[in-house]
Amino acid sequence: MSIYDPFRAKMKVALFTAAASLMGLGIASALGWGGVSHAMPVIGTEPQIPIQAVQPALDLSDAFVKVAQTVTPAVVRIEVRRQVRGRGITDLQRQLQPGTNPQARPDRISGGSGFIISEDGYILTNNHVVEDADLLTVFLQDRRSFTAEVVGRDPFTDVAVIKIDAPDLTKLNFGTSADLRVGEWIVAIGNPGFGNGSDPLDYTVTVGIVSALGRPLQLLRRGLEEDDETRANAQWAIEAFIQTDAVINPGNSGGPMVNLRGQVVGINSAIASPTGYYQGYGFAIPIDLAHRVMEDLVEYGRVRRARLGVQMEGIDAVSAESYGLPAVAGVELTSIIEGGPAELQGLRLYDVIVELDGQAIGRTGDLQQAIAMKRPGERVSVGVYRDGRRVTVNVRLDEVSLQGPPTVVPVTAPVRAEVRMDEKLGLRIEDMDRASALEFGFDEVDGVLITDVQVNGPAARREISAGWKILAINRLPVETQSDVERIMAGVRRGDVVTLHVASPSDFQRIYHVRAAR
View: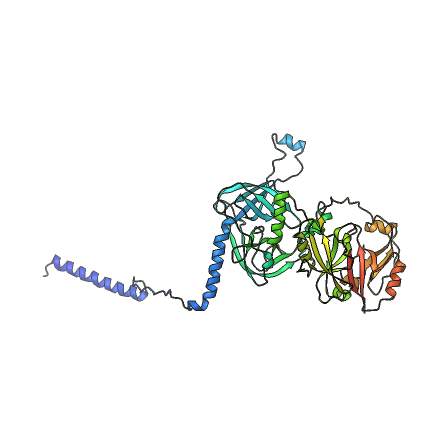
């Protein structure tokens, strides 16, 4: 007979529990459930490439950081409010909604960038950022904001000056765009302020090189030509942009482009892409030009623009061959404005300008910018090729007088009899009559008109269109169609033919066309 012993029973239970626990731990360990710790990996921090091997790149990176830290406090965000103007509500709407304000429409809000250029609050930006603004608000890096006034703006260079009244401002210094070199590093900074609330996506810093200089994009001119108010003055657009591969997107317009010394060399202005967003290259206004425009805007509220008194076109290979030039460079004079400085002081039609005050002139943008840097009344020394010889003409510039918007009278094109197309140039040329003058917009009924251009013909390949009046062929005056036939009879196939033509507004051009072979 066994006797129950409580102590021995408790020991058996304890031993059984311990064994079960050990077995469970073994199973858990085998299944990977255990809390087994691993040694923490040792992370290295020593450079894997010797500092000496990459020191130039590190120095450049430090330079970019220093430029960004120095420049961004002077870059501002500009918020632009424009009232939406339209027809008021109708009487019926007013009856249905008593108390409705017919002017109560939400403002359109847009923006761009700018940068402070003086301690008393002057700011440079783009004209297209601030034009037609009803209210401008400037936001600083320290989160202060101020209402700004427009000091002046110039649609012909896309430069504007605005001003705020604020203490303790950080300003930027100017470099010179004349010293820029293709391949030079630049930094583009903007403050687009995308996003909502108190913490917008504000400053952007991008880096690139100068890809090209003096780019004549025709962006400003096309914009001016599309506006009835400015179309008559579109010829005064100055376009000699700095091209860069630094990213410039909407909102960055008006911000500074700076060199590695932190000096402003351009104003971020335009991007060229089908979508309006960055696709590999951006453009900036040279700061030398912007500085000159800024001085007049601050002093006069407008730009006092110097005038040479010519119309011009750039030289290409066919033009250079026609003039016998030593290089494919320069600007040909297609018209001398009556009573202007050029006419009064000896420049002539068919002169090719290659230098102004010692500065080489390679394209139209070079000459436009060189004249834009001058003031009315200044004298300039103009180097030209004339009849194969190099000559110098001294000219005293006068001031541009802008025209008012033109009066446009719609006309209905009449139907005329078919006229044979000239085979050498691919042009249809007719004596002007009342019907053709009316069709193409000429006030006077005299001279010879280009009424049609053969598709893919020699003239079409030089981008000649119908509607030009022919003034001369190969420098011989043209008054009738028989003059054209007589002159063209002496033209051999493959010859370069020079056409001097005029539009209804007397805008004149010179085309050099190689006759069909």
